[in-house]
Length: 345
Image 1 (tube, rainbow, N blue to C red):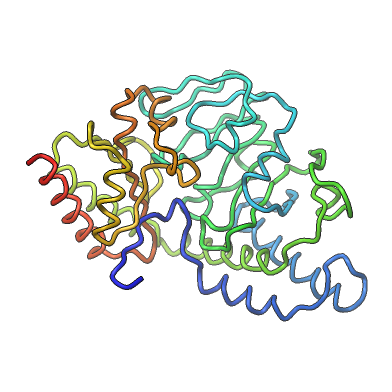
Image 2 (image 1 turned 30 degrees about the horizontal axis):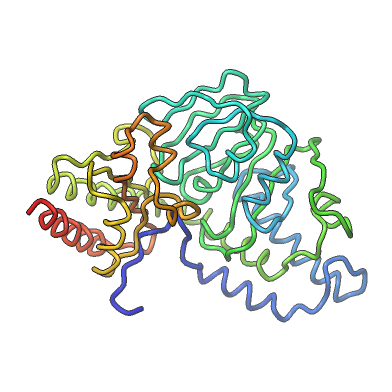
C-alpha cells in the first residue's frame, strides 16, 4: 500500500532480500532432502547449509538445530509433558505449558527460584524488557532477541531455546528448537524420522533456505552496529511522544530493553483505538503481541507487571527496524500527538 509506514517489526519483520533470493534459488532444487540420489543430496546440502547458518548466528555451534513450523511448534516439542514454571510475561506459546507461576516485578523482571524446572524468555515481545537468564534453565524463548541483540546460546546456560524466522526477516512458517548437545525430546509428529528423529515430515526446504540466509544477514547487521542506529531512532520517538503527552508511561524505560521496542501506556486511551487511529493515518502499529492483539482484552504481560486493567488495556506497541527512518518516527509522533490532542479536546 502506498503511503504506508510499517512500525510493527516485532509482529513480523519485512522479508530480507537475502532471504528472498535464497528461497527463489531453493525453488529450483528438485530433490527431497531424505533421498539418497544426487538430487536428494543436493537438497540435503542446501538444508544443512541453512542449519549451519542459523547455528552460527545463534552462537549455537555444536548444538542441535531442529527445524519446525515456527517457535510455537518448537515450544510444544520442547515442553509437552514437562510441567515447568514460568511467568505471566511469557509468550502464549510457552505459557501454555506452564504449571507454576513465577513472580514478576514492576520493571518486568522475573525471578526464577529453580531454573532446572523453569523457562524464561530473553526479551519480551510487548515491552522489549531483557531478562538476566539464570544458569540451568529448561528453555529460553529467544524469538524476539534473535537478530536484534547479540545472542550466544552456548553461553546462556539453558538446555533448550526456540526461535522463529519471520521475526528477523526470514519467511513465515519456519522456526527451530535448539538443543544443547546430549539433550533429546520426544517427537510430537511421528512418521519418517526427519530432523534426527525429532520432527517427522518432509522439511520445507524453501523456507529453511530463507531462514538460513536471514539469520546470516541478521548477524552481519549486528556486527555492523545497525541496531545501535535503531535504538537512537527509538529514543527520538519516545522523547517526542513523552513531551506531547505527560500522562504517557514508557514501559521498561531506564532498564535493559530491545533497541527497537516502545510500549506506551496512556491510561484510559484504549490500545485498540490507538491502533485504528494510527492505521487510518497510515501507520502499522499494534496493541501488543500479534498473536493476541486481535483479542480485545487487557495485556496479560502488563497485568503480570502490576498495571491495573485500565492501564493494561491502554497500551500501544511501536516496534521499528533497520529500514525505519528518522522521518518515519517523527511523522508517527506528529500523527499520534494530533490524535492525543483530539482525545483531550
